[in-house]
Every structure is written in C-alpha cells, then in structure tokens.
Image (tube, rainbow, N blue to C red):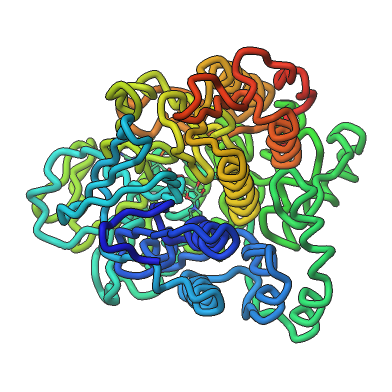
Length: 563
Ligand code: N01
C-alpha cells in the first residue's frame, strides 16, 4: 500500500526471497501498510545480480523454494535438478504474481541512510535519489553475499580490456569468443564459471590462490515421475527441510567415519560422488568436527582430482589443499577439473607465482606477463555484513551500526542489534543463514518477525530491541558453536570475514544448526521474548520481554554443532 507522505507501518529493504515473503506476511496477514524498496531494476535479489556463465543454485530445486503455501509449491514445476538464475527469477516472478506483490515494490531505489528518530519511534530512510521514507518497522532482506569484493590489485584502472565481477554481471551477453580471458578466484562461483567460459574462450587462464575441493553436481533435467513425486510429497519434503541442520532435504548420516573400515568408507564416498551434490558432506556425522575423520574424505577427493586431470603439475596444484573438506563452503561443479584437460585452459598457481599488478593488456605475475582481453573477478563478497555497512544505519543516541559492529557483528539471534529498535534482519549475522539451504532460514525468520510484530501490535508495544546482555550471550554462543567445528580452522574463509582487508575476524553464521536455532527462537517467544526489551512510549516501564532476568539459558542448550 502506498502513502502520500511516504510513511508506512513497515519498510522492507530487498526484493529477493526474503523481501518478497516478508512483504506478503506483513501486508496480507497483518494488514500493515508495507513498502519494499529494491536497488535493482527488478526482483530476484542474489539471482538478479548473479548472472555469470555457469551460475546455478547448489541446492536442489524441489527444496530451493518457498514451503509456506502448498498451493504455490504445487503450481510451480522445476525443470532441472539445480535451477539456474533465469529459472529462479521466473519462479520468483510467478510467486510475486500469485501474491500480487509488485504493486508494493519500488525498484531502482537504493537506501543510503536509515536513522532511528527517537522522538516518535520511527525509522527514516533516505535513498540515493534523495527521497525519504518513514516506517515503524524496518526489515532488511539484503542477502548475505550481495556486496561484491573486488581485490585492490594495483593497475586495474589501466586495463584496456573489459573486466567484470561475477556478482555484478551485465545483463547483456558477454562474448568470450576467441578472447584471452583471465579468471581470478576458484570458490563456488569460479568453479561454476570456468567450464562455461572455457567453451568459447580463445584461452582461459584460471588464477588460483587457494585450491578447492569440489564434487560433481550431476545436474540433469527432472523426469516427469520426479516432478510428480515432489508435488505429491509436499508435506514430507517440508518436514524434511525443517528437520535437518542445513535445511536440505537429505539427512546427515549418524555413522561416524571410523565406525566403517577403509573399504566400506570408499564405497560410501564413491556412491556419494556418483550421486553428486552437497550430499557428499552428509556421508558421515563427524566430517566437519573431527580432523582425522575429515582427512579420509579430503584424501578421497584429492585422489579424484588427480585421476581426472591429465597434466601432473596442474593436478598437483589443484589437489594441493591444506584445509579440511567443507571447512570452507564446499562447491559442486559441472566438469570443473575436466576443464583443465582442454588445450585452451591453463592454471596459474598463485602459490608458485604471485600477481604483481594488472597492466593495460594483462596481468603481471612474479614470473611472467599474461596478455588478456577480459578479466573475470570471481573473487567473492564482503559477505554477511558488507551490505549493512554500505548503508549509513544509525540507531538510538546516534549510534552507528558500523560502530556497534566495529569488533564484529553483535546481534541477538541474528535478528536484532542492541541500540537499533524495531530493526529486524532476515538471515542476519549470527543466524544460520549461509550454512543452510537459504529459503528455509528465510521462511523461519520472516515468520518469527511477523509474529513478533503481531505481538507488539496486539499488546500496544512500540519498540522491540535486543538487550546488550542477550546479544553478548548470543555472540559468545555463536563463537562456541563455531569453535566446535573445523570451520574455524580455515584461516582464509569468508565465514570469518578473512577475505576482506581490515574486516574483523569473527565467525559470522551460527553453526549450531537450523533445527536447534528454530527451537531457540521459539523458546525465546515462549519466555515472553526473553532477551528483547519490549516497551511502550506511554509507559516508562518495560511492558514485556525478559531483559534483566534470563530464565532461559541459551548456552546450555547446545551439545553438538549441527552444520
Ligand atoms: O567467493 P569465495 P564465491 N587474488 O569467497 C579468490 C555462494 N555461492 O563467489 O580462497 C587471487 O568463495 C579466493 O581465494 P582465497 C556460496 O555460499 C552460491 O566463489 O581467498 N584470488 C577464492 O578462490 C559461496 O561460498 C552459489 O585464497 C583471490 C575466490 O577468489 C559464496 O557464494 C553459487 C583474491 C573467492 O571465493 C561465495 O563464493 C556460487 C586475490 N586478490 C556461489 N581475492 C549457489 O549455489 C579473492 N580471491 C547458490
């Protein structure tokens, strides 16, 4: 619903999976005047920006979608095991049409500032175009990997060819035909992009700083029988994604690695390799918590690389991995290692030669000059907090979010930050987010925020704000959960913010698993929003919440991490 004075009950930033569903619940269920603002010219979020060659979701299509409506779930038909950006955008457009969402989304609207006005408990937003908006509730649905990280390699401004970052890919087709292409980065994105770029490039040079494990995705069209089955099994699939730690529809085995002998293990790994996909990570219970257990999977995958790649030196560089499998987000691929058997592809191993600078016609390494027409930066993101920091967000007492998060994001449940009343984040730092199949935590957050706002309105509560004490306790617990895994042992991971110069080294997502996280959030509600201060401006007393007395001990609820 639009308003002449640009004043709304709720404003949502972002029109991806999060923002679309949040718009539906606040506008259609709570009947709030609600506006969604989106910097892109269309909806899609991550999938609006990430259109690089080979882009594809690593979650399986039948689970990478909304589950809140059986009708919507059953009306949509996916075509492949893993959906690409175009199909995901079509799906989100279909949902937006079903729910009539577009009329309340303002595109091409980049929020540059958000201020909490204490005198009337409102958020005031300013956009790049100079418009201002006001709202009682501000909800961010800005994604976790949406702020492109372009490394500061000297000389980029001198480069006379074309260059692109995968996360800001042009909407027009980019031709690599007969071009000399340099791709920097071999994360999930680079591993998807290289095989596609190599198909038409004159020559592709893949600059690898850290080698990566990868398991074949084994993408394929879905059979009619499968499509029927996943429609029929709606309830079961919904139950499954809500009962696994990662929100994927497959279970993590309860067997530990050394309960099997070498022969049995090889069979388990071989079967998972043939099946393909992220399930490889689910083969054993202790893969991400025990280094010795992890070594068995890591060695299996390194041997696979060596058996695929013909050139011994290249194979050695690709398999020269010194951190645990799945310690960083594990990629899945379509012919990534096979691509290095092509005559028009070479690996530049940055452990052997380093990038010195970009020149006007290529990249100068410590060993040679590599002439290039196109540079593709598959160099990742200022993840999880980057997009927040691009906005100037100011809470109570002129506290800036950048100041509040100076030593790392300090949130309660990833949902709120002390000092920023009525500002809610969907999949914010300190929530399971990127460790999951994203639609699952998104739906849980949207529903929790909706219920919280409904509770506030029903009880005449003006502001909801995380308490300092609860946030401190939660941050300690996020660290505790991460420290119980091997994920913290990878020094250059973006989970830790280690890929961005000057960013605090703090493990940002919650590694305790989605099931436990959901239970904790429900328990907080049951205990009258424990850890949140709920107040009314007509009442100097706190009208709800459980700020001072925690009768609910978060830290004692965790036994094993659930990633
Ligand atoms: O980014 P990354 P990404 N010189 O940060 C290298 C999601 N995703 O875009 O490891 C040379 O993982 C860097 O090297 P190093 C998914 O969650 C989802 O690939 O830092 N190299 C690394 O190799 C994923 O985890 C899907 O040493 C430099 C690469 O660039 C997340 O997005 C698909 C460098 C960056 O890897 C991010 O993945 C794809 C430099 N100066 C991605 N700076 C789906 O399925 C960086 N690198 C939905």
